[in-house]
Length: 86
Image (cartoon, rainbow, N blue to C red; front, side):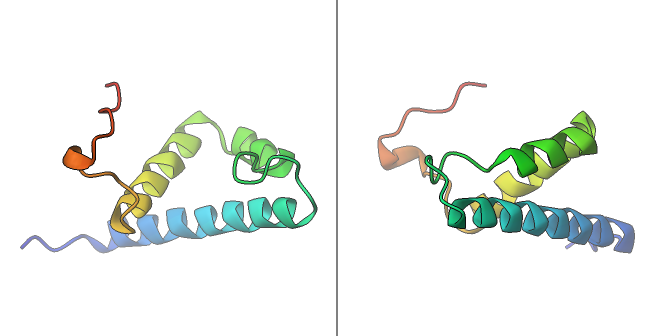
């Protein structure tokens, strides 16, 4: 098994911390009475993602997808769901 370099572990920790901040902002938005719960993350999240820039936002999106897969949110191929477009 390959050892993950310390700088990669540190970067992933930073990505996870940034995602936690975004989730905290989205939860706060939901608590304030968003009319689209579960769909809308709030303007604060959108503004922060714009400030981070495209490359950083894409990195966070990939990290979030990987985290969701680890948590079991990814459907298995035999679940009867269509395969996502590539």
